[in-house]
Length: 168
Image (cartoon, rainbow, N blue to C red; front, side, top):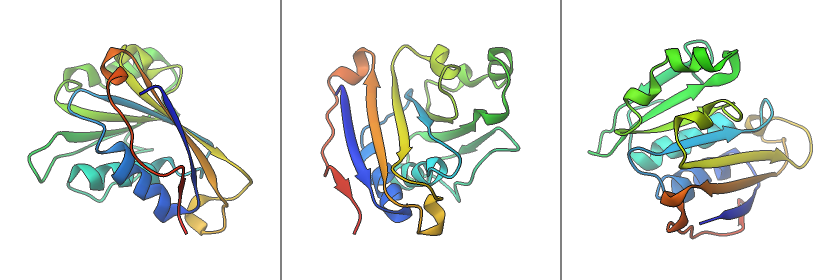
């Protein structure tokens, strides 16, 4: 897998990308870095990933606690959901001790670009771009483009199946 691009119509469709496209790809030890503007749908995407992995929820933004662990309810890997928005340095990220659990969980870092890459040479980058303004949660935010790019040897052999456009 090198790169795919999807057009996502609404919040439910963003969850479906997380559940039906990304969750089947990831496994214990994977790092996923999610970027996008405020309100672009990053947490909505992670909710879908959590549903696809069968983790205990609800998956909500960990903005103020920085990281939250969602254990699997189906015998799969846990989901570690990190919001790096408030982190000011690599040292603060290191203080979370994510590398201690990286091998046994799927770690998803929102706002992690240019910071979380040090955690693994192999990672999945997911960038959400608004095609016009608005918040994906309000149903009037308009479509998004979701760019999914695997980096490193472990992603080279993984393939993505799915439509180029998601939503009604």
